[in-house]
Amino acid sequence: MTQKARALLTQVEEIAAGLVTTVWERLPGYDQARMEVDDLSGVVAPNLIAMLSAIADRRRLTDAELLPAAALGQRRAIQGVPIESLVASWHVAERALLERLITTGPALRGQDLGELVQRLAVVTDTMIDASTDAYRQTRSEAAAHLDQIATDLVSRLAGGEPLDPVDVEERARLVGVPAQVPHRAAAIGMTGETDPLVLAKAQKTVLDSLRPRLRSRILAGSKGSTMLLVLADIPGVDEALARAARRPGLPGGLVVGLGEPRPRFGEAGGSCREALGALEAGLRMGADRAVVHFKRVIPEVLLIDNPLDARRLIDTVLTPLRSSPALIETLRAYLSCGLSVRLTAQHLSIHENTVSYRLRRILQLLELENTSQLLRPDVLLALRADELGRG
Image (cartoon, rainbow, N blue to C red; front, side, top):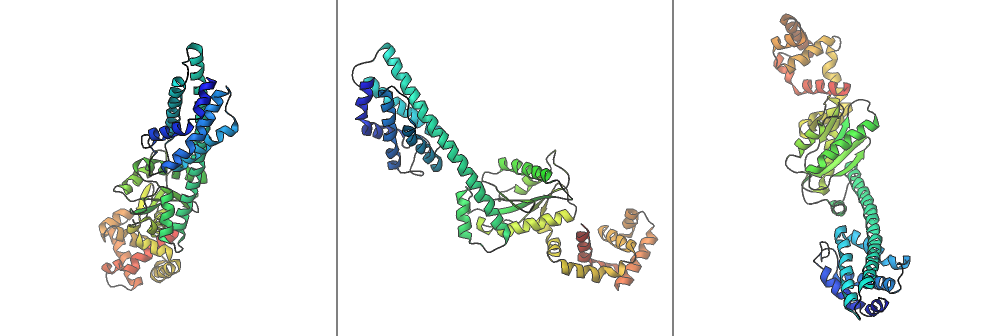
């Protein structure tokens, strides 16, 4: 056995070339898309030498001899070669060496042949353990690094500062995001004083329920206590978010703000700000386990983003009615009931004559000529600004 192994040490380059031919483009991941063929050739020979030397000397592999195997595992992890293909490549080497060891020199029989097979198997398993351990560690470190890149990307998009779309999309491609397709943002929050742990658990539940429905990666970051997602805009993504927000076990008051899609990932910063604005509007309006689309709350977002103007509007329109809260209550009910005196009376549980009297008083205080003028934008916006302020 020793003589056979030492004889093969003189044939390592030839054996290595044969292994490269066998592995190259036959095992998934070993192709031009991930590596050059010379890269594969350069790491095979040192590992074969270590394996044959350990067999020849009837000993275990040393730590120094395992270093090339570990380096191989690290490199394959970075190149994205499946770990199953990495293990398969070692077994290809094992079979090639076994065939050579059996056919080189005098034939081995019985116990000697069994010892050879066993020693080769032990050496191969030791090499596999060294390379797969390094592979998994590298993948774990790379995943943590990519997650940090993803989080930073979302924070930059939501920050509002000018960004270079080319740089942003280059980073997005690093974490597996198709930057050329439309993307949009979603912001997840809850009403009231919420336990941070409860909020974090609810946000994670929504995110986990979304992932199986989307083929591309979802980037998750945060702005304050709000989870912000940037995801590919595919048909039905809003329905998927709505179903996620209504999942059993989620606490009440959960709201998802949804920004409008942008043509490319690098332009998704605007969608992030829209999602945050829609979320804030939804929270103030008392939405519950619902998705709030930015396009449906643009007036509310404008009022929230301009608090001084909103306060001035409230004071200008509603101050004359402040002396009688019943008048403001009646005005809100009358507008929500489609300008129907009868429905307003039913809604407030009062007589229709009382509603009519209050409406005359409202028109008088606001200096309006008829009830149709209650639909003026300043009146409607003032009432909505007042609701948002109290929310």
